[in-house]
Amino acid sequence: MNQYSQKPTCLTEGIKAAWPICFGYLPIGMAFGVLAQKAGLYPLEIGLMSLLVFAGSAQFIAVSMLSSGAAFPTIILTTFIVNIRHLLMSSSLSVFLRGLGRGWVSIFAYGITDESFAVNINRFREGKWHWSQALAVNHISNIFWIAGTVFGGLCGQLIPPGSFGIDYALIAMFLCLLVFQLRGRIYVITAAISALMAVGLSLWMPGNAYIIIAAVLATTIGVLIRRR
Amino acid sequence: MVRSDLICLFIAMGAVTFIPRWLPLFYLSQRSLPEWFTDWLDLIPVAVLSALVVPEIMTVGVPRHLSLINPRLLVALPTFIFALKTKSLGGTVFAGMLLYWLAGIIF
Image (cartoon, rainbow over all chains, first blue to last red):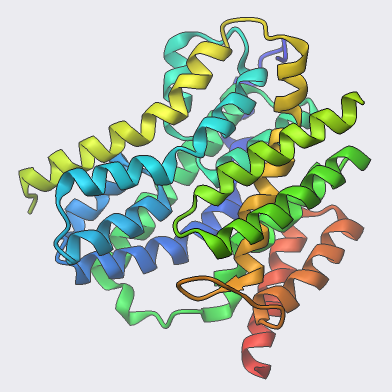
């Protein structure tokens, strides 16, 4: 962890790092808001859900389950299963948050999403990233997610879906962050194994458990190859 | 307007989402880890990113099936090369969006 304080710049640096996430969250958030509104949720409820849960795919699934009349315990269990993949991201971030107080760590944990993880882990690896900047990325993304979903619930139907290729923002961001992670042969091999397994498993099993299974297996194989 | 049963549902959903985000960070950040485990954690990001994005561009539909010719995948190739060449996140996001928008017009 950096010894020097970067507090004064944490917000501006956070915004610089978080903008692709915000860009991607707006259309997805709005799409979610439209869906949630159709499922009978009020804008305030949509905002509270985004604030309390802050997990895109789980929220989509929960809302479609709500509109099909699923029981609450089923929805809660599904949410848990869909979000269990964050175990891996949280473990991986822990290396860079060593020694940070337990209170701050707990606040940080709230904001770990696929997107904030991807951005922050890259910055941490470059070595010039302070936890306060990473926390800023988490919360700026969070604000955009909440705003996008509420906006979608209020007037999302007025905007045509798929405008200006904005649906591709997050995919392009993930592709680029994946490129940044390809820092040597072992990383390329691990990425290739993970991709193959993930595609294979995703065709074979419903839900998104393929992410955690493919990542754990590919990482383990990668470590074995590296240590050989 | 807010219904209290829904808020209870959202709180429970939030709690089960928070636990896997919080547990590893809370415990692992407070202790030193064995070398094999940090080696393992070192490879996690690349594996997670790959597992997140590749099925996203190579499969379509519900239930998913393999699709080797679809706009997402076709746009992903030049976007990937753009990212490799420029190492620019902002540039890549815009290039990907532009190409996807164009692909939407062509297809």
